[in-house]
Length: 172
Ligand SMILES: CC(C)(COP(=O)(O)OP(=O)(O)OC[C@H]1O[C@@H](n2cnc3c(N)ncnc32)[C@H](O)[C@@H]1OP(=O)(O)O)[C@@H](O)C(=O)NCCC(=O)NCCS
Image (cartoon, rainbow, N blue to C red; front, side, top):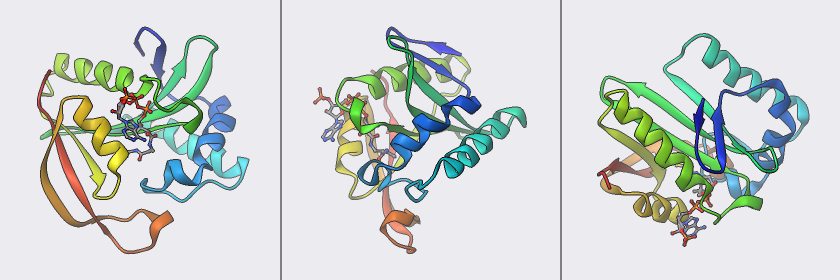
């Protein structure tokens, strides 16, 4: 569990399903993610179950739920994959809560925790046309280091792998 001023970052639980469905079904929010918009509560439950299993199995990829403290509500997730090279992160916030600094608060906390854990290389891969996230990363001390040709499939935009940008955390 990681605490910030306004958020608790915690492992997923079954009752996250409705909140996950809410942001997971927002076409614009999930457009540049590696999954299609969710269409039913069952799909959201399957999604949450998979995320719970990652924690149970101590997988190297885990999703932290972003839970607002007041009122207590699940507003998004931060996905982190640990490897020998460091930590790769991805993030999503319900559109209702955009531009209120929540993702920045979460990313700062995860970066601090990663550095305490000795992971000095922290990166994010973002679609080359995902300008909002690029701006978000740059505002949070990440720098674009390389274009990755045909790197990730974003199903909402088609089946072909798309160009992405590799961002590296440069420290504050
Ligand atoms: C990227 C995302 C997580 C940002 O969440 P957020 O909580 O709104 O971000 P913050 O409020 O902390 O934003 C911090 C800064 O990032 C930049 N930013 C965030 N969203 C932006 C947007 N839509 N357009 C331009 N800049 C944006 C701004 O500089 C912002 O500061 P400001 O509001 O003071 O101008 C959110 O837009 C999202 O969920 N996007 C869809 C999912 C996605 O594409 N994830 C990336 C996968 S790599």
